[in-house]
Length: 335
Image 1 (cartoon, rainbow, N blue to C red):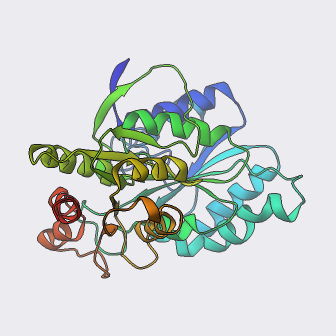
Image 2: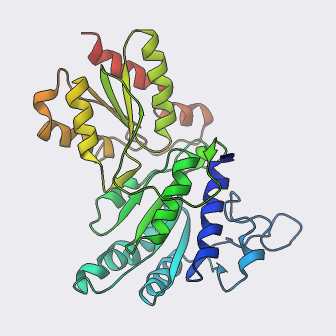
């Protein structure tokens, strides 16, 4: 295996799937790219370079630079999926979801159901999520709770480069609409990633670290922070089990319940505001189905219920920190 960044792993998954299947097309604002460099199309590949190099290899019929119209991008992708193509449509920032929400949740997500299972919609919507790049309140949100709540959508949140490649390949080959959410702060993180294509099934959580005293469930960019917290807890003789669900819909509740049955304690970490967050959803599920296993109250570590700040110090304080995760675990382990 080779060391690859999160960005490179996603790019490689796209290229390999486009070579394998001529029906796979990539579309979105500036996915061909070229602005800001020498002017050669394909040199830049999107605002953070994820699709760099695809245009020269596959050309304008399969790497489609679209107008700045999110509703057109997702609407066209939904229609293309119904006709047999496998579009990977890029919504540059998840914050623009409101502009194309009808095309996604009221159309693509419902096609299979509305047509009695006869319609396939192999659409992937890629988008960037999360704070940390000083992009302001309108470009830094994590709206995965909205998307997870929609029946008919599958929602993926890879936390590392290895998972990013395997989950994206799985998403492209899936016959239902998949929302693939990429954490901006992870693009330069590096992991061992196989050169060949591989798939990671949806709905199978990864137990990133085994432990016996407390379960920490974290999503996306919060997984590395949970691992830092777990290492700090180990110094205090507290053994934390860290679970990365990988997908929020489907959600691997079985693995979470099994872990809580072993540890008796749960901390859920989610980079979204607390109301109707994934932290609240997981906490409610465990309270309903695993209450007898709990030795202490469930702890939720989330962002505050405010827009993402632009000021660097405030933005850093907004995102759940390893220290906040550690303190939440200590609160229920040291009683």
